[in-house]
Amino acid sequence: MKRLLVIIFTVHSSLFTALAQDDFGLDFALEAQKKLTQNLSLSLEGELRTRDNTKTVDRWSLGVGADYKLTKWLKGSASYIFIYDNNERTSYFDATDDEVIDGDADEGDAKKQGKYLAPRHRFNVSLTFDKKLFGDFRFSLRERWQYTYRPSYTVDERWSFLDNAYDGKEHTYSGKGKSVLRSRLQVEYDKKGLKLTPYANVEFFNAWSLQKTRFNVGLDYKLSKQHTIGGFYRYQTVRSDDDDYEPNIHMIGVMYKFKF
View (cartoon, rainbow, N blue to C red):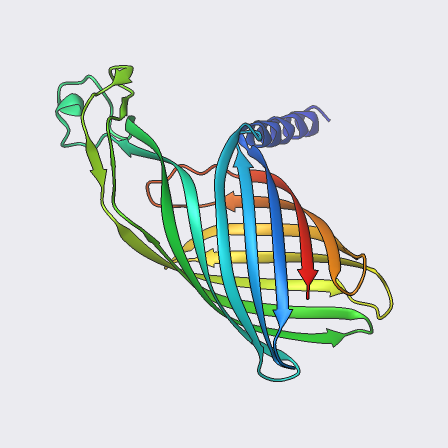
């Protein structure tokens, strides 16, 4: 019994510590969609996200896209998204740094951090397979290739963790592009005549290795043929994101969609 209590206490403490380190944010999205033909539709979408327990605007974006229904069960999509991002980029000491050699810092310690607002350009190409199975349950698999380009940007100064002050020196972050394969598996309850559509999905972000995993559960409510509102809860875990700091995050989202 004592061993069991120790195990339960250890697991509970570890879980509480992990959750305490997670972030929390909000997501607000608006989308307008226009059906041009039986198979082709265009869309315009805006989004705003927060982080740091909703205290900081993480990013806002504006995107345009097109969907084309190739068959009854297969849809192709393409989109461009302009993202204005709130960046926090941190460098770390390595073994060759003078500070490490002199013993003033340890290898792997945070070195300097730059904070700045800057744009990103994102392109997506997707294929989505969906089919109703087991009555009114609709299953879908979306495979998306995502390419994001971040232009170079120069900051006036960076924060030095060792000196506990700004260094007063310009630093340029070089531009770079990144490709990611996003795989999303979703199930929703899609009953004809029912205004509520609950759903759940899991999405994996891969760039030679698993970068992120997103878990979503949500509910869409159809107000009319033209108007839909929705809400969701998301938990995102992060394995790696290059030199950008990004903690695991819990997120609550609200969406409004208009079709015309």
